[in-house]
Each structure stands twice: as C-alpha cells, then as structure tokens.
Length: 421
Image (cartoon, rainbow, N blue to C red; front, side, top):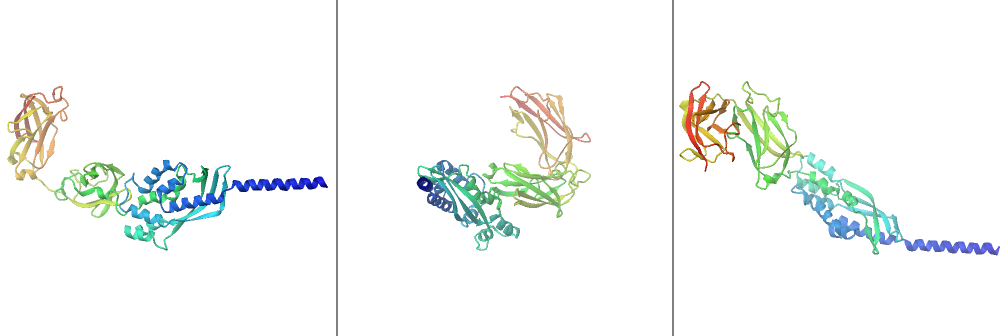
C-alpha cells in the first residue's frame, strides 16, 4: 500500500514537470505580436517594415519594392492610383486559436484571414459598362464593393529571440499582393498611348489612294517611343464591314505599320489589274489588351491615268551628283526623268539599258513608276554581275542609260561619269 502511494506521487510529480517544460517552450504571445506587426505592415504596404519583420528581409526588400512600385514594367497611367485604392481596402483578422509555437524548435504559425476588394470583379463591371478609370477607382473604394477573403497560415521562425516571418520566396506576400500584377491589365488607356505622336496613311494623298494593291496605316511614335516595342493587332473594314483581322504583330522604330492588300490577305478583293477595289477602308489598331491605338479611314480610288511618253519629259537628272554628272566612289547610279505636271499624273511603263564605255552591260525588267521622279537604277543590287572594285564601288568609266517605252521609243538618254578618288 505504501509503495503504491509513493509511485502515484512520483507520477504526478513527473507530469507536472513535463507540463511545466511544455509551458515554458511555448511563446504564443510572441508569435501573435509578430504576426500583428507583419499584418499591419502588409496592410499599410510599408515595404521596409515588412522586410524588417522577415527572415533574410534585407535580401528581399528590393524585390518587394520593385513588385509594389511596378518599376520594371510599363504600367497604365493610372496604375498607381488603382493599386493604392485597392491596398487601402486590405483588412485582416488573426485567428489566435490557431497559433502554435515552440521555442525549442524555433518555429511557430498562425492563421490570418485577409479581406480586400475584388478588383477584377469591379473592373469587369465598370469597364464592361463603358466606365472611365476615375469611375473604376471610385468603385474600388465604395462601401458596397464586392470583397474577397484569403485565409493563409503564416509561418514564423525564432531567430535571436525574435519571431520572423518565413517567406523567402515571397509566395505568401505575393498572394496577398496579387492585385499589383492584376492591375497591370486594368487599362482604360493603353500603356503605349504616351508613345504615340500621330498616325497617317502612308504613301497616300491626304488619305486617298489611287490604283494601289496595298494600303498602310502607320503609327508614328514619339522620339522615346521609337525605342519601345509595340505589340498589337489590327482590323480592316471595307465600307463598314469587317474584312480582315491580323495575327499579333510586334514592331519598333519610326513607323508602326498595319498593312492591307492581297499580299497580306489572300481573300482581298482586287480588280483585273490586281489593285484593291475602290471604297472606304478603315483600319483599327489595338494593343494586346484590346485598347485602341489608332483608328482611321482612307479612300481607295480607281483612276484612269494617261501613259507617260517622251512629250511628258521636262528634263533628266543623274541623282546625287553635281552639275557635271560625276559620281565619285559610289556603288550605285540613278537616272531620273523629271516629268511635266501632266507627266507626274501619268503611269510610266518602261525598261532601260545601261552601257559602260559604249558596251551594253544591263537590260532591266519592265518597270512601272509614277510621280515626281521616274527612276532607273544601276548597282550590284539590280545587276549582280555589275563590275565593282574591291571596295564595292562601281568601276570607273562612262555610263549611259537609255530608257525606253514598251513600243521601243526612247524616253530618255544620258551619260554620267564614275570616278574613283
């Protein structure tokens, strides 16, 4: 009987000792305090405070700053106002009943439920109703805006007597802050809009084309925009009816080009000469978010032009030479007919021959031209067998160009000199 009593006393003593060890091992209050500080910093988007409460936070601060500032991407013009408004709706509730902690194992955890505006839902409604960005921002902060809740377990580690959030890949934080990335898609004005100076119909006469097999609407970027890559699609309409939708295009430089014609759309309707049929052609260029970058209409006409002939030649000129018709260290030469005012409207159909020191060295294919210069070129680009020096210059000599109509009549004939320095 005495032995049983002693054994019972020993068991009670050991259990009390174990309970005391477990009690001293826990630090639920420390975990809850650290979670509160972290949650408050996250809700306030206080980047330096967030980093200071994290394991290896000094190494993570720059990544958090970049993500929340959008400094490495092109952001919509009102992006900062959007995300600031969304961030202002963040609230949280820490579930103190879920806390765990062990100083011996240097680890703890607690569940936090985050609540914030459902920005995607609000955007879909406002944008779908044709609302403005200001209306969107107002709707984000409205008391009756739809909310989302995210419940996540925050893990912490004990380091140097301080409880620090363990989120070295920032997965936890980025899930709460997902709206910073989502808001990049909330565009009412394209991020490319600030880089657009103007747009116009290339090679048109005040948006009017005559007898063409291709039309082209070009965006002209700003000087800064010429170094920005434009990703876009475009549509063409004929007399109000959609006739063509492009694939995605990427372009950069001084012209961002949207073409239409049989070379781009095999279904393009053309006349017996292969030219686009007359009518109104509208082009709309979109960024990849579907925001309009350019919207313009041109007119295509079919005009009967006179045929260019020798009576319409006002003068001839060797282009890019002085008055003595001498080229020095050049890899190409060019004889131009300068037409009369009547000839500028005419269609010139011709071919030409090039003679070097009276020897025929080149006969062109049939050419067609119109405008202020009717051009005949000669270089290795046009004649792969053209004689050139080691430096790529045409060999010196007297070069004669004779331009003929298809009936064999001479339209122009002139001689230039090619020299080496």
